[in-house]
Length: 268
Image 1 (tube, rainbow, N blue to C red):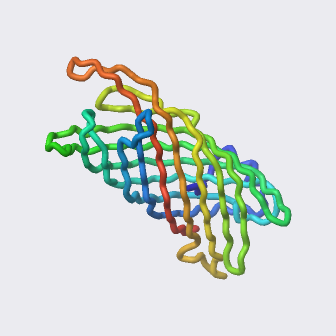
Image 2: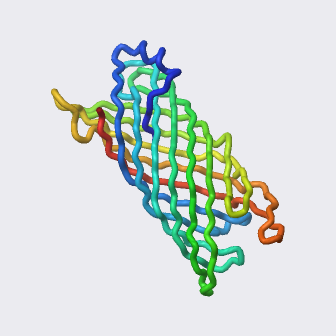
Image 3: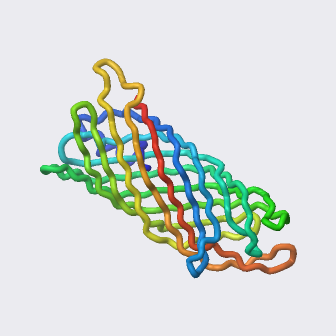
């Protein structure tokens, strides 16, 4: 899910690239989203799934020829309303809707080793922030269940390899990597607490097909991208809060986030 944007500290290095052009790419697409939470014994507590729409602005030089410095950067915004199937605080089944809205920023850099097969070695950092609003609903017994709003801020590092390809009238780019959060924050407005979900490794993979431009103009669609991305969190530490004069222990269960997405791009 990586698509690049210009950054100031790269200016000097970019200037050394004789073929560098500032050609941002706008991407729009859809991703199938799934969020799951599990108790300490591994039993699933809830599942949220459904489509989210997104757009991004990007810049990179992964289509360059020859060895040398490789960079990627991207800023992305996304939103969507997904289905919620889970349970209330008493363990009674409940079904609702959850609204997600957030943004991602990623910056990657590395080096291309040119041999019989070109290989890019990439490392980077990312920032993913979103709001999760679970709507009010009724449980299986017909009782009202109050919704909840959470705000997540996740900072992570990545390590990946990229494999550029060249076809007759197009280029391909396969990227496979792992990520791990180094900072996690979850603000639960209803309980006035901030949790820190545990940090675990997760994987991602993407394939981008870039079409050659017409001789005198850009193609209407310059690329298509398919990708899988994920985040993994272990259970957070417990925090004490008071609701209606009653002390409560609040924690975030073990959680998994996964998306499978498709995007079309237009270069400018």
